[in-house]
Amino acid sequence: MVWGSNVMKIITGKTAVVGIIGHPVQHSFSPIMQNAAFSVASADYIYVPFNVMPECLEQAVKGLKALGVSGFNVTIPHKTAIIPFLDRLDESAEAAGAVNTVLLSEGCMIGFNTDGDGLVDSLFNDLDFSPGEAQILILGAGGASRGAIAALSRAGAKKIVVCNRSINNAEVVMSDMSKRYPQTIIDIVSQDGLTSQLLENTALLINTTSVGMKGEVFDGLNLDYLPRNAKVYDMVYTNSGTPLLRSASLSGLRAANGIGMLIAQGERAYRIWTGTNPPKDVMRHSLNSL
Ligand code: ATR
Image 1 (cartoon, rainbow, N blue to C red):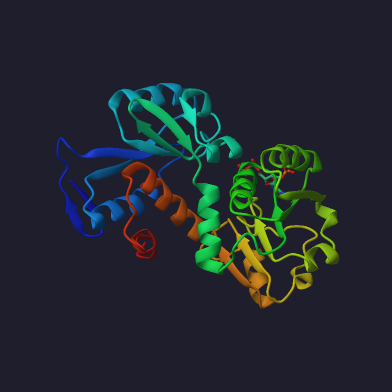
Image 2: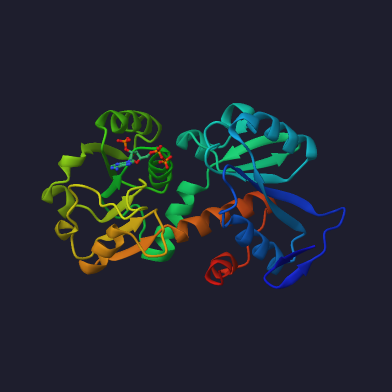
């Protein structure tokens, strides 16, 4: 028996199992969010964390298939490593080169990436931002950046500028994404290319790097050059807030952290597994009560 939103769930022979694989996994908020949503919706599902060591990934994926789970989330360090063990990738996962959600459908394991689309949902919900509006500046060229660029391009972004410490990594991302999404203009700059002119033309700044997690600042970035109505999104979330979000607030800019993205990627995973919409705001409230 499991508790979610203070309602006791009875597990029966018909209860569908979903979960998350990662290492470590004990700090994940997903079990709390998903079980709260299943509970409020009276959906007969249970969400369980599985701590899977990297060397056991293949066995674990085969095992989950053999056990007939309905699906599962994938987190660090398995998001890319899992790809060879899946039967098929959705466009979202193929473009991002990473999987965060797997659906088991008629014995077939299909990989999705709901992180990027979750970001787009969160930009809309938390900052009233629609990607078609104007130039977007993205800090970082790793997996999180790829997912973001892919989803923003699919959602109609006109121009994205990628700023990265290693320009070579930014070049690879620009080349891959431009081929896949030719309707979006993708430019790159190095960290010392964050000029006043670039920032003055930016409507939205997104940090996809881990910079800020331990209180670091992104070298060379001066938010004072952004237009007054520009918005700032930091995928990093810490209890005390990040230097980027504090600067945005001091500059009077609308800003949000990655909590909305975490919630929205979970809501999308719920839809993929159940085929239904999760109950509104339940995942968000489940985190507020922690
Ligand atoms: P993820 O999958 O979470 O995006 P990743 O693929 O390791 O993680 O990518 C990390 C990103 O953060 C990269 O863009 C990295 O820049 P480099 O390509 O130059 O390595 C960026 N990053 C990490 N630490 C950084 C720092 N201290 N300053 C600037 N950029 C940093």
